[in-house]
Length: 312
Image (tube, rainbow, N blue to C red):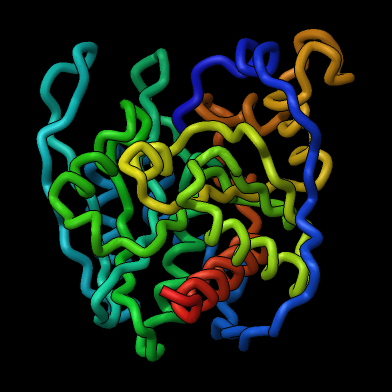
């Protein structure tokens, strides 16, 4: 997650919390992912992410996708910043099915380099989301859909959403029906989502809210949500929603920090635990909850099928 100053953001933003409770609509079939064990999901995260450079993460990610019978393509691009200098990057892309338009699913696999020069394990930010996306790929592979499904696992998100920009620049954005982005989703059963991605994203939010209500999922809407790769798509006028997960208390603390203003009720200087973990040596494998990640993968799968069946 691209995160700079939580305290500054909290002081500037005000609104009221919203929990999705839309009226029930026609229920859509729920796809059940063949149940991976919690241990297997943790093992996958460890094999791909723990103690690796971003290049090693990419290579391990490609190997894992192939184990599951998926066909990843690696899109290279020239990235980096004025601070890092020119730096090659690589997005890992999996395409499922075919159709005249695309539903795109994104999660960044890169981690930050810490002040001492070592790499963060990047488990909360963002291995959990990537593992959930892989579970969605496995469930959606072979499913009949009217859209082409494109999973883009991006690089250099932490440097400024560079991988997502590179992918969109090389893609025909007029084909994109909707984008689902996942960031910071290693534990917790409360789904958080942002509402600040433009009027064009309204039908995506409506589908999400209906799913939350029908499935009885605790979903918390953020009028202002922390930035991630979703901002690349919203800036281009593409419908998009960004999702994350937390425990219920953590989700509401995070809501208050970003949307509660000066009188948010949080102790002065308080920073939600998730933001004490990410971008630090504390972003460890021990925070990944395999059961929660599998559940989030199912949620992403169902939302993808719901959007696939929505009116064009």
